[in-house]
Amino acid sequence: MPSLSLRQHQRAGLVVAFVFALTLVGATPVQAADPATTATCVDGGGIRWSTKVVWGKPYVSADGVRRVRVDYAGWTTNSRAVATDSTVKSYNGSGALVQTLVRTASPDYRLGTVYDSRNPANPTSGGAKITVSVGKDNDGFSNCVATHTEPGAPSETTWTAYVTGYTYYDNTPPGSAAISHPVIHTRAGGVGTYNDPITVAVGHSLATGRDVLDFAAGTRFYMPYLQRYFMVEDTCGDGARPENGACHVHPANVTAWLDIWVDGQGGSENSATDCAEAITGNRRVVLNPTRDYPVVSGAVSRAGQCAI
Image (cartoon, rainbow, N blue to C red; front, side):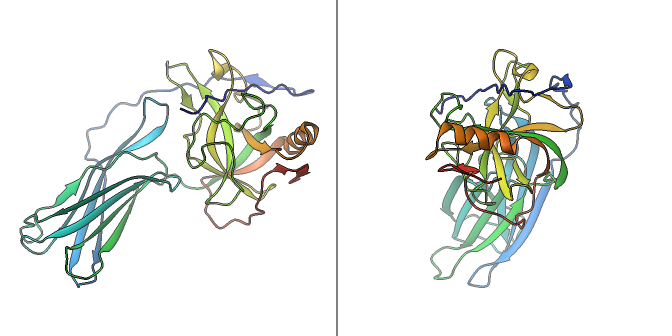
């Protein structure tokens, strides 16, 4: 398992206004049908398929990751028994592939009234997707693909965050790029594009006896002043009550504290630290950004050069 990276930055002259603790409030279950998404597609042989995915409610899994339950991914066609190739893929909200389920079977669809189905793995919430590729087996034609996106995916919002940076030299352990919640990287990294965002650490809480992040692993941000995308893959805060410490202590006029991976490898520790200080401050941040913002690709600090 990757090492758990817990850090607490002490910056000279930092004055904070208040301390707050993250409180989790349980919601009362509502007796309602789980939402379903439907889509149709036509395979290379001209057969029209109807597909359906039934989504459950988002939840926090035992590893502290916010996931969405997928109860069912099914397909049917207006025919009787058809030898069918099917591939069901589950994608995290970050776009990373979670699971691929492949099967060939000959179900009786009973003129479109019966579905064949699979039960995909539960991806991280926030724009998760399930794709269903389906077609007649051994007919020499291509399958068609229907894409289903998690209902109620979070929309883009903009607010002010207190942004700091951590480097290769002051990470935990020092001289490493270890992270606690890898999503698309096994070590802190990224170049700042939408598909390869830079790692960012967020506050977390142990108040419930589980390690719960302020923002789910895989959540994306865009920072206009750096012209780079970032993704939650690490935690910030130390001790038995991290909810009372670093990344939960920030000026009163900001929404959250984000600690971005500055890197600094290939340069001196002083140059990396100077860059981390230079990017620190109250900054405008886009949560759940679209993929079309301008990007200046590259590490925030590399070989002694700083992005700001």
